[in-house]
Image 1 (spheres, rainbow, N blue to C red):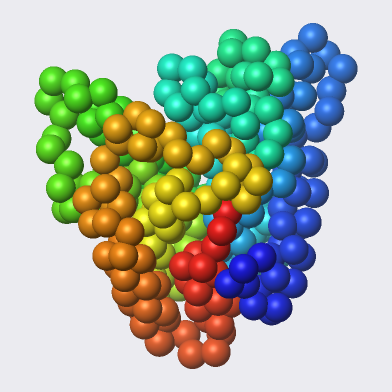
Image 2: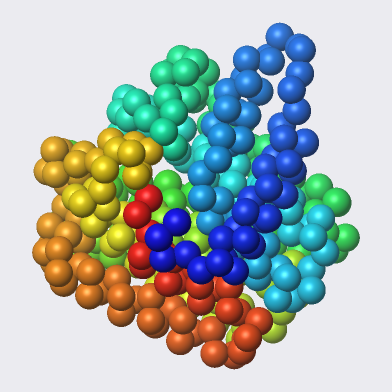
Length: 304
């Protein structure tokens, strides 16, 4: 993958395999009447993807000497929430996409009703996993994980950001006028807070000091915005083969993006600045955060 170091490539492959195996165990194949629901949940969560958010959970957990089994469960829960959001985003009522990761979207492979239920199933299963004793022996840690993921994914985070995005795209009553601060806030909610949870989850599992959790949160803030700007750039410059989905949808819908506000050159410059800032926030961790530095460089250079 362009921009990815050999160390990051190897670590990502290793952790991705572990997360996929854990997801398969947590979302078993069944023969009961609701089997179709589980088929759709597995279809949407086991078919690849970058697994960036689970990777961030696993990597930060290692920095705080968290047991791999605990980290894998949290990483799988994060991926369930991420995949639920993709299923719902792809529906005709939202982005109306036919392709995801190079394969038919869930509602195309199954049907719209099954896709909605598959997303609901993944979301609720994620919190079941976090709340269960195998995730961590300390109930207070499990409660904090549930609370922080709910904030990141809910109306004050990802779902709220999606609402703002819909209002602005449809130019609905009460929609904010999207300038750079407004679009930054929207994407911080829609994308950034899930990335932030993924970075801080390992520190929560490891009961890390507040200042180290804050350093990871600051890293995630800049990483998430960099990720979104690159997404906007790829929608203009990427191909369907690279992206595994249809490019050009932002322009076709008249959507306001970092690229439409800043232009291509300034958007690229801003993405680079954010990647550099993200790396700077990792100073307290010295060499233990090298993989996170590699992630920032990869996010900046990625082509999919």
